[in-house]
Image (cartoon, rainbow, N blue to C red):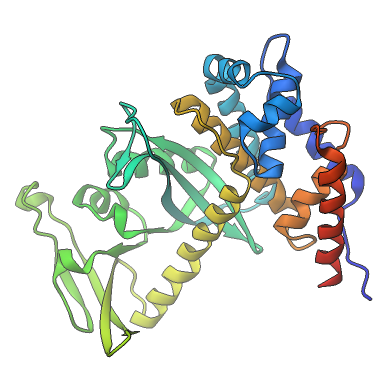
Amino acid sequence: MVTPSLPHQNNIQQIGYKLLSMLNFQGEKVEEVAKTLISACLWNDSVENKSRAYDVSPQTVRNYVEKQGMEVTEKLLERARKISLEILKGVNEIDLSIDWTTKIWYGKPVKGLGSSEKGNSWNYATATTKYKGKVLLLAFIPQVNGMTKDEIVKALVEQVMAMGFKIRLITLDAGFYTVDVLNFISQFKYIIAVPVGDVKVYEEFDGDYTTNSKRHRRDEQVKFRLLVYSKEKVGRKKKSLVYFARATNLDLSKREVLDLYNKVRGPIETSYRNIKAFLPFTSSTKFVFRTLIFVLALVLYSLYTIFKGEVGREEFRLLLILLFPDLFNPENFTFNIVETLIYTIDLFLRR
């Protein structure tokens, strides 16, 4: 059997204490509140369930977050950016991927937030870059009603440039395809996905295209290079071609542009899956509460990136749990820790 190479125990323990220190609420129950939130992330459990294990009511946790959450969230984001800057030390030029992810709930609508067709939702947009196999968070913004897509992109780009980076290339999903976004990103090298239904080109294509938005004057329209390609879709009874489009200002071959888009854009989807793996559940529909737990999950993911290559995501999570029986000690800890230990050993044996 090959013995796996693991991060040093002291490094993992330092992460746990840093997490507690970052949740610097003020009040008598700060330790219980911090442990509740972090434990819910690590166990992928509900905040309400974990609060009872630390002898604090769910309402007390909600009160702390709702009153002090925005300040704590900013400090969490500052820590996540610091982690990325440490990894990117000496790097001046980056490829940037911008996208958003949606968390939907079903129930009474909440005013002032983004909404989806299926129900109500919070949308969180991020800007990331990939460096040495690590997908690093550089900028974050929650989307609220009334915020336009170009405002989201501008805010994220401004955050990245304020960190001192030069943007070599920007990639965006089709959800950002608007004239205003195109006008803004045209100052950079870019590749953006385009809804085929908007350009109505249903054939292999590589040529010039000009937008024809009815909401903009003729001098506000954007000219770009449009690439359209097809993929075969196999249905139950027959095969069909599905078309996809990309807009760009790059002077590369069509194949190079498409491959570059996938290379830069693809990792952000993986990062969202990893962030959501640390995201706890909650019955609270408060904007500040939902934003804080998302950012806390984001920080846990950022900390995990430090050890990526040494341990997998689940191994990182389980190592934190195993090394902190004194900090994260729910009522059913004895049962859970045995189950966790068995699962951890199984992960290592399957390497």
